[in-house]
Image (cartoon, rainbow, N blue to C red; front, side, top):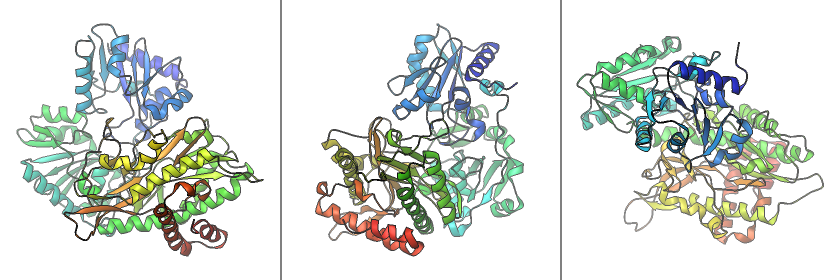
Length: 604
């Protein structure tokens, strides 16, 4: 019999813990590759608790249970998780160690799955629990999997080839670059576990994880330029074997753990952010002299070559036309009161598929009406879905996975009423302050060596002047038909544990530019374009300078702009942006869609 209630699932997990003589277990949103988005088989937290957010974890003891999420999910977690079963805890204010210290008896053993956590996470927990009488212990196997009777199997979809004409560089060239890095570091090999790194290195893609076109696998890259790909046999096609050639040995994924024991006495590296404890334990048990170093593909993957840049531009142009058609449709249809969040998201996807060839969405669309727009990472489902009210703000953050590029765009629009209405002065003020910050990032010029943490204040300054702020980062990296949230670069406050804010910015990196403002239970605003980092030629410059070139071309909602808050140069930026939108989109549109774009892109 399948356990249909979360109460029954929680009870079954506790019984399994008792059987194993464990006092508790930590359940993250994670897979063996530390992926942002995970396959259905790895959705353990959602199965146990009902929580559908993208970040968080739970801990279950024999007598207590808690779910830990950050401020983005304060409302969502209460809607989806039964407070009678799980205590609500907010990070970073509430820590796992403090909670365990308060609910566990002395001598308690709290288990974790070593294939779902990094070494750094374990060390941090052990340090925090020192002297508490609570011990973290690795589980031999995942106890939750033991009671999840209908757990889906990992995807068996075949891996696919990403041709060199779309990647701009062959796999052999990339592997040679990794080999040079290994030689320079005095290493024999590196274990690559991040799925998008594997996809980039071997020029392959897959459909094993929603929203990210990757194939479940591992790679061990050697200093002679060869590599071993560990992947399920059913995912291997003759075309893949031919593509990889003799320098890449294909091995069954089930052989990976044993292969970690083949490096006795040899120096091997593992990325501390993506290499899980189970891999580190396997290397150590096999006698390898392993060291933690950043995956050598991460920075080259982030610096796009000319072919990847052109692919992004082409994908963005098609995507922009699809989003423009959607915004026109919303302007015509939503005031009738017949559109809800789910139907809006579905309509937007249909426009993208017509623009095609769309492989997938790059993340679940944030289709947020009224107060839901105040939740930066809101995810609509059948339970949360509401009508889009006329006379309100609607926010849509969405993107597509095209074979030549990955898109990510947010637009905030006013939904009119049949008789006509206007946004409030507060809405227009906040929208315009967000726009001013967006413009500052777009036209920033900065010296080589600058990092994202140093740019972040440019986006927030006008909101700070009004005594308000936003709780998320300003910009993230974006892949090329890969992860929509790609490191190592990031524009965000340098404090608060935001990874990547200290990463030096290089020409070729792509960022999102997405400041926002959120008024709880009322409305939310975000404006997001993607930008490409380029060198800036400055007469008399002392050193090398960089700036951004916009990649996203979709009209901004003029009804939400308070022109009086803009400077002459900011007005000129908006007019220039809209002129470029019109020039790029007009050839792709006709009829009423074309007329709408021409109207919406007239000078302020």
